[in-house]
Length: 263
Ligand code: 76R
Image (cartoon, rainbow, N blue to C red; front, side, top):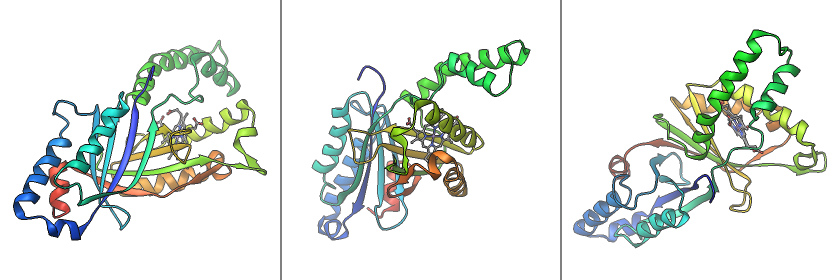
């Protein structure tokens, strides 16, 4: 791609029957292979690799991979399949998406218009200060959206979502200005969680069954519940959003995850 990264969220279930088939040596070898495949330091590692252990029956192990090269990402999943644990780890869910800068991220010019609409006159000294702060912040924010650093938070949740196309609530027939206002309201409500929750919205229209993937990381599980609950009241979500399955997981090293999963 000209900019941004490919992203894969993939979830595996441990098949106990297959695990029991392995001799202690085979299990050991499979474990070592998997640790090597998921090592961020190895040659051929994807730009980002994150391992987590999933709550609930839907999956046991979650892997998040990001890279400019989609085949490098796919190579990881093929290596898992071809490893000694390939029969043990069954993929049960995956989500394919790409990073993007949303069309609703205001340009400095749009930001200036918004300031005026919200009542800050261009003569007001705070106008120039706010605009220049935004101008300075924007490149780093866009860098983070396209080439995200993973935050050092222990909890993660992933879910896919759409904006609905219902005759009475069709996001795609709303004019850009209306959508943009709704997204600005959404962003304002999200900013209240700064420092507790970090979000990554990846785009999946044309890549997967839903339009976006929502990845939230947080300092503590309750903030996940709080943000998702609160954002449901944003008009952009209350009226126009629908959601797929949720996967909540706890981030750890691959070794810790295999220990936790008794592999
Ligand atoms: O990128 C930015 O921070 C700019 C403002 C912003 C955009 C453009 C923003 C801010 N979001 C944007 C786009 Mn969001 N977001 C979600 C969900 O559960 C729900 O109800 C919805 C799932 C959450 C929890 C969330 C959190 N956002 C989007 C889009 C793409 C729309 C498009 O491009 O058409 C989706 C699908 C989406 C969904 N959002 C924020 C947050 C938070 C916490 C923020 C504030 C981030 C910050 O600036 O600190």
